[in-house]
Length: 353
Length: 122
Image: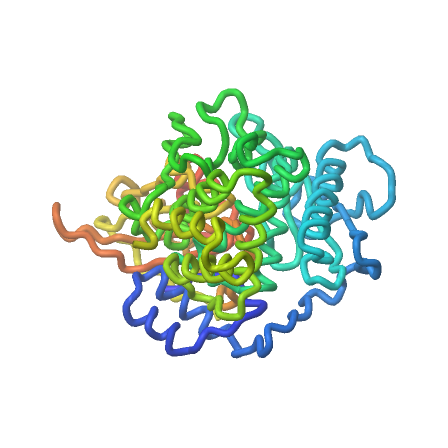
């Protein structure tokens, strides 16, 4: 059996015995993912130094902190990457909505990371932000391929073009950040945390752009993507996982919001887009309990946790939750309302007792 | 490294094709297309076998990098009797590696007749 569904770890070190344990005890799908990792992992990431970008043909990054280096390409409905360069940093609008949306939202995402966390692009060193639009024919997906972001035009029946949603563009860019900082294994609970972190920072980017407080935010992911034919509001709801859509074609939103409803499955890499509803809701509970702007205390706690050297590549929900409480403690003090809010949020979703 | 060659398809074989992954998991879109070999001729089973061999010929040893990427998952199940089914072969393939015949089969369920020319079907 051959499985090729786990992303190559760019950073991070997972002891081989952990992978071997998964191979021994995990389901067939996760076993194969772990086997792939074991084969691909050369045991690097000493000191969590940024890993070099594999593609030597990358265009120039930004030498100036606070300024992005954006490059938007068109695949011209083919499945080729990166495609034809359509717009680069500083150039004017092209009148191609997908190109201009990708350019605009990559800029908004860069600005969020820079102004809130003083992070200079994905690698902190001005890495160029590459986006390809018009990927494939009627392609209903967006993804991060380890080097760049890719966006389809949607089929027009169920899905609009995937550049339409700022939080989706930011979600994909955030995968690059998580990959650099933590290298979370894209399977099971660590994979669900990987997905949740992209939703958290994707949503925060949108909230920051709109100037919305936690109370004003919609806490939806990809609200602009579903066409009016679909019976649904978005791809996911961080506030109420499992309620984003209920449609004859798409089915019913499968996300749980509590550990009692945790989904054991080999589909979707062990449910990475399913069980991410649980940590998503924990973040939402934290943010709404504290009030104000969610990118401030809650976003800072989650970002600190992402940087935490104790964050292992195979961390589970309990381990991650414990680290968020500890990071809230370190930043705000053990008796702070922030610590209490984080602890109560994880208790509220059944991760911490 | 390429995948294990698919086993021969007999009348008790069932081929399940799923497309998984992507930015979100939609249960309705993740349902498998099931091809019950008992319902097809020898020639159609040869066509399926060649399509599977072609899919398995891709180099799948490289881990798929990134996140939210889609894959095709192919399972061959053998139905021993009404209650016993075992999966005898699985292949997971990045969607960009999938032969066009596989994508068409997943989308439309049309199984072609093999003309036994030995030519590639993609």
